[in-house]
Length: 457
Image 1 (cartoon, rainbow, N blue to C red):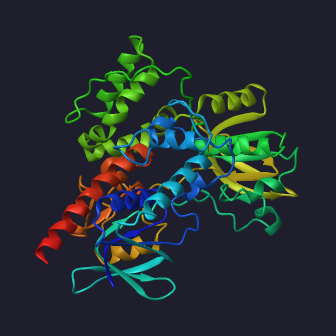
Image 2: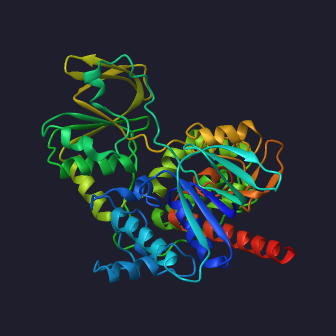
Image 3: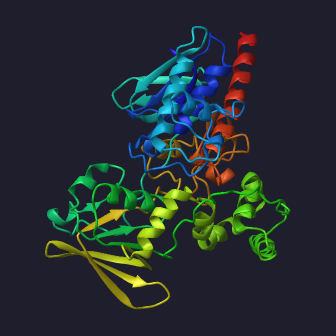
């Protein structure tokens, strides 16, 4: 059969789109969801079972729906997990909330048909009916009149080749830290080096401590920066005066610094930028966007993507106690050193080469930039001209309505993308508040299109 809508993906973006479609489409409509993740909708971020792994957005802003802002807080109350609006809930609880919300919607009698196809889509073909067909890994094909691509990000690979390491050594190089079974293999006094110093690093440090690790931890990243914490008593966002159409990156930075020097707390300035970030990004010339990615991105990340106050305090205590040491530099090589590993890196701002000798290496360089390399399907769709890569490597090219552009730059009226794949157009599109807004807008357009088609038929 040909479905009215096919959603490709099984992470949070996909579930946000499906939930909004179920609320907006008539009972006569049909949806197919193609994805092979057994934890559908939870993805890497919300599948963790560790209570220490917290959201970095307050509970009051984490509802799945723009028109029901208190939905998540109310769910927490129903599950006897009392929460204030400003609390930072556990990511595992949020994953359960997402699962329960979808299940509640699917239990309704008068709703559209939703079929979940447990498989990977490996190819895409255009059918004479005007539908797009997706070839499935296990055989068969699913076709849709409208399609939403919700393919998220893959875990970033290590920046060096490890094939020269012995098998025993390689077993102590953790390429994907979210496969948490590795934590049980680390000895209490083993030395650990974490590559990358963002949010994932903090999660894994606290995960190690909760599993009884008491050894030394080195953290190596290019700039040696670590995320800041949210304020315990947050103040209202500041009004930030920026011309979103003509401002350059330097003008924006000068304006922010001027406002902070005048006495406005920097967190208030960052929170004031929050609802305007997409418009500011869209107003930047391509050269200015590229400049931001080359020079300003690490500082943006540590100020913009902050951690829950109690988690930040726990992490800072470990730093002050000397448990964690930060190193700024560029990873060069990993080599066998008996039963340990030598990490050779060049110190930032210097030609000097230093060596760290450790028992374990953990890849916390985060998620890869939203390119096409992690997805054979996207690569095939690009080869056939259905989609075009964003010029800066930020996913695929889409217009401001999230419609994909083909290889000739023409808007595809039946092909949308939601989430990280659209970072080239929207930049801030990985957090729940941004994705839910985009998912609701796309679902609304699809519902209007479906109604128009039904009237014609």
